Image (tube, rainbow, N blue to C red; front, side):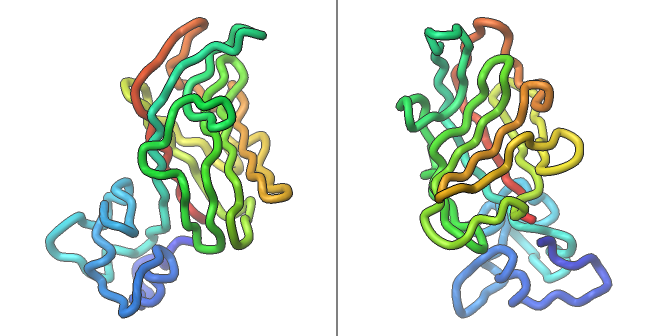
Length: 198
């Protein structure tokens, strides 16, 4: 949940609740690009003066970077781009195990299937996964247009479930327009996935 808008004082404990952090709490832990505040949250400085006012209306974001690999599913001849641990394709460059406020998950698959859509899977390691616990998923690809997918509304997920510890989120091909893949195309590079946590 986002921190309050300007006009209501923010406590440093509220910043810690939103972004995580260590005890004793230090404001210096919360520079953009540090251990707790993703570099996508540009209203928070990465150095220099950092004040409580920088955190108005901000919310937690988590970034996962995928080293993309391209392969063909010989059965239907569709191009798959991304990371899929089940078929040992691609890799996650920054780990893939993520602490959310209420749980810990490990990413098992994030990939685009030509003409079908964008798939995301993870395993719940501990805690409780809330299907409404995220708001947007921004996909930034090497050489491609950055797109933002949403949990509800415009560009919304078609599937958003957790069952027996397996998390599944799927966006149909009509939603993630601008992924930059044509029929039979190949791709190499990296993809940054930034989640904004509700």
